[in-house]
Length: 61
Image 1: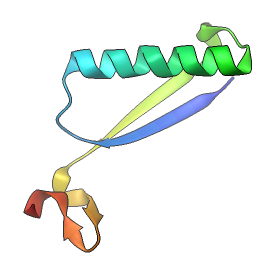
Image 2 (image 1 turned 180 degrees about the vertical axis):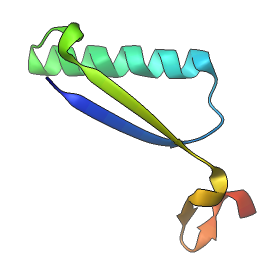
Image 3 (image 1 turned 120 degrees about the vertical axis):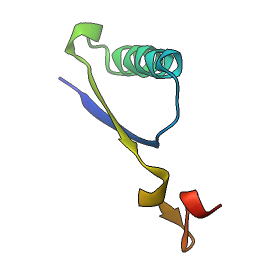
Image 4 (image 1 turned 45 degrees about the horizontal axis):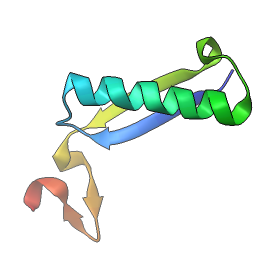
């Protein structure tokens, strides 16, 4: 029962998130030879002011 957490910045559309979940599920199912029904995907969206890289918050760019 693979469980995958995807952390990403907020702002993606529902269609983009749907496509991501479908494609990640298919990739895991194919590579691990496991049924799609056993794959769980958790999407965690972060506000841009909660994510920083190289000392700069995304919201400050």
